[in-house]
Amino acid sequence: MAQINPSILSADFARLADEAKAVDGADWLHVDVMDNHFVPNLTLGVPVVDALAKATDTPLDCHLMIEEPDRWAPQYVEAGAGSVTFHAEAAAAPVRLAREIRAKGARASMALKPATPVEPYEDLLPELDMLLVMTVEPGFGGQAFLDIMLPKIRRTRQLIEKHGLQLWLQVDGGVSASTIERCAEAGADVFVAGSAVYGAENPAAAVEALRAQAEEAAHRANGS
Ligand SMILES: O=C(CO)[C@@H](O)[C@H](O)COP(=O)(O)O
Image (cartoon, rainbow, N blue to C red):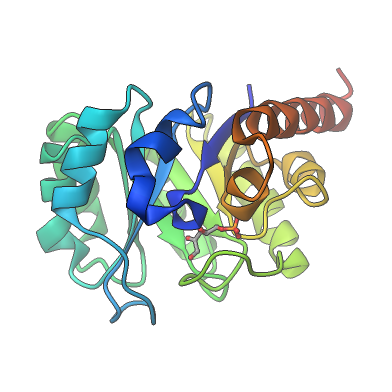
């Protein structure tokens, strides 16, 4: 089952509660936390996640594009995030951090920037609930999808199958009506979409349309 997670980076930050409600029906709300150190952009932190968690019934998928996630990630679980993603490139102790996130009651997820291969992390995959393959350089919404990430998505899907894991495979960056099918065919099952959802006239309808497209593409790829 394909999941669509609208990214609030493309929403109106002055009306976050309303913007969260505008995508009722989405599987998760994707919250991009940026610290202006790990990425060259600054967005929001724990107090905003805490407020958002109270403003919407849609679970929060927090993507931490920050340095020192080992120190900060647990606070996002306490603020109400249902899933917390830290970057492999930033975590000092990814196994310990994933275990801590899970022990606190959230799904643990790790992200890979475009230049970071998945293979060195093969043995860590059972510690995770989701792996995020970035399909743009993290930092900004509205960038063009990097086609060169499709082989990495395929290789990650093969590793998940090789180990018989229930790991979700998320893609983030440039996901839209014109790229989501390629991602689904390559094996992704969780799709973050910012501008493709919040730039649409009807964001909730855009979520449904993207989900239908992804599911159809996955069925085609599986021959079902
Ligand atoms: O993490 C990021 C960017 O770093 C993303 O979540 C973007 O917010 C996705 O936006 P679009 O590429 O879908 O417009």
